[in-house]
Length: 209
Image (cartoon, rainbow, N blue to C red; front, side, top):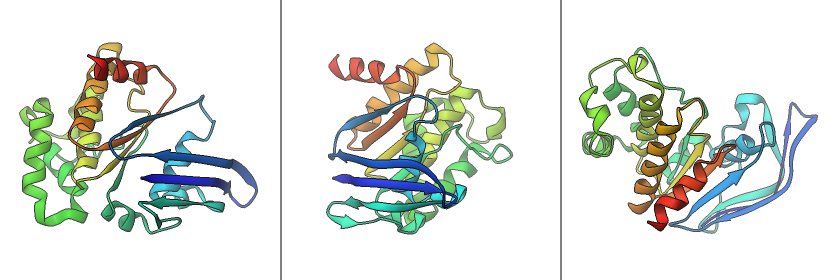
């Protein structure tokens, strides 16, 4: 179980962004964290994955634990090694690199299984298999989102944290991403989904059918 207890986060030593946030995510679940822009949703994910330093943020109170082990303020690479992967808001792919090169970068903490994991990801995303040698910057928005998710899956995560995966996508592509998230979850990956939109409704509808 991934657990957040009474979390408080401050940016630049003065800006209080989170206070008293608690959240528990059991293995196998899809949990949706919903809220408007600026509500602190991304800060919650960055706190879990150790990326608060990017914006000079600090955890000032509370704790984060994984299966009973305290991972608060752990190095980001160590957090990935423990089975937690994040898909950043806005995709953040390397546009000048090929699809496969992007995937290889996602597998740097799991280098012994890179080839097998690339095959698994390309099987999950057939459109990426078709374009595996092309530059990622030429992919559509939906394809880039698939690549960002695939890159995170390269580390064989137990927990996948998705920061607004529907951002900037057409409604049809939102449906496709929702189905993919459900499929990933069915393969044993626990999902924390941060969203403003209604993709979470689509996911739970898919799970019910």
